[in-house]
Image 1: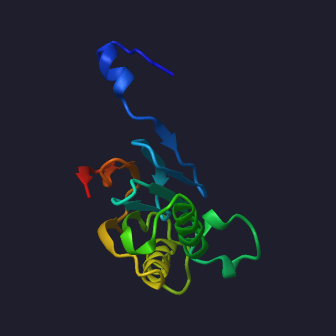
Image 2: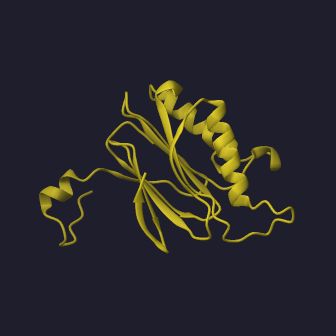
Image 3: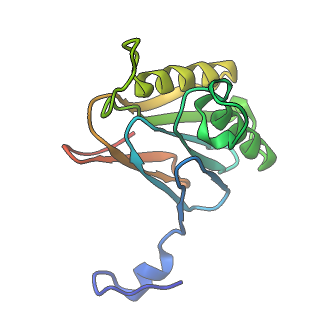
Length: 173
């Protein structure tokens, strides 16, 4: 759908990559030059995985560390099974784990209700790292922790991850 807001020329609007929104506890994969976006990353983590060889890219927005903590449910909701389902979807699109690279953002300590001193954000980060390591997928960029929320955009064509937060300037990983 073409949208004209007066700030872009018509040719720029027509050439803009498709924007694919990824909600909380969702994942999406593309083999096109799309822009995968998610927002509301507090203690949640956005895991972006891309494959430069075949052009596939995917993004998952995980909420909690482990599916074992809660029986059943949506695999994309958890750091362990969310990474798994994203890797499976990328493999179905023709990628191999050897060619995959990951970038991660989020894991803030905005609301810490834990009694053992380990926040959900830091536990999410630890589990994401562990699961990516199990697949031998290197993390080549990250913006984790702190006490602020984030929104991210994965440029599928380049693998660049743009991280926006309320109290800092945007960074590109």
